[in-house]
Length: 170
Image (cartoon, rainbow, N blue to C red):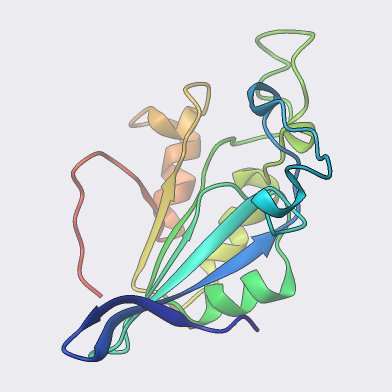
């Protein structure tokens, strides 16, 4: 399990602690990142995606932010189970979502995302967190449509579709 470090120091006590949770994945095509000896130290992690778990040092409340998840690792699973609020990758509903629009589209797996339908919905449904919210939602994802069957399944699982300006407390 990763170590928590101070995010902000106020009056000699950290107000907010955090840890980075390395996730496997590839960089986005537009990033054009090629690892060389010169830039090797610029990105100290093995993967190209990171989730963050934040802890309020006073209340002990925990928030997990995981917007780009290509695989649910053991460390991510542990953070999911210990968080009070979760902001999770809702990029795609299904693996064939983009292919239905464009035959030559890369697959969801190639793009480094788990799908809601085949992975994260059931995972989030079972978690004790008070707030479970999908974010980083692609415009092809049917959960964006109020009244869609996919949106109904998400809401029935106790997960919210993120919207700009939404606030909550942990």
